[in-house]
Image 1 (cartoon, helix red, strand yellow):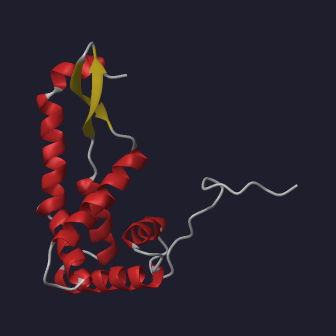
Image 2 (cartoon, helix red, strand yellow; image 1 turned 45 degrees about the vertical axis):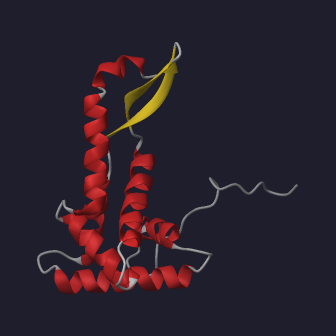
Image 3 (cartoon, one colour; image 1 turned 90 degrees about the horizontal axis):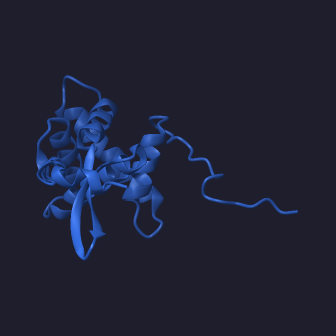
Amino acid sequence: MAKKFTASSQQLKPDAKYNSKLVSRFVNCLMWDGKKSTAQQVFYDAMDIIGKNVKDAEALEVFEKAINNVKPLLEVRSKRIGGASYQVPMQVSSKRQQSLAFRWILASARGKKGKPMCQRLASELIDAFNEHGTAMTTRENIHRMAEANKAFAHFAW
């Protein structure tokens, strides 16, 4: 009998340079059209730029702290109750926190134009490390919306 192959049974391998599963996940999110080697090159070039520009910390530490700074604690979800839709604040699971942080950092890096992707990604990661930048603004907006709608928290399911 053939073994069932599911995504949960497939183990993510750590990347070759930093031996980190977090880096592997980020590179997979960065990848477009299955071009993993291109995504890895962009990421490693960005890490080299971070290593040159940030003197007080290593590039991997900057990356990990940037991801942790961007992770949201709360988010709002729509819930329909009695013909009205409410924005209900809810806690975010750790897996979703990580995926949202990746998505926001990559979206803000891709939104900048005029420079190579490695430079845009490096600048966004440095900004997130310093708690500035577009990804941090997105996180703050999400938290602000959750705070504004905390009166509806009792509707959380």
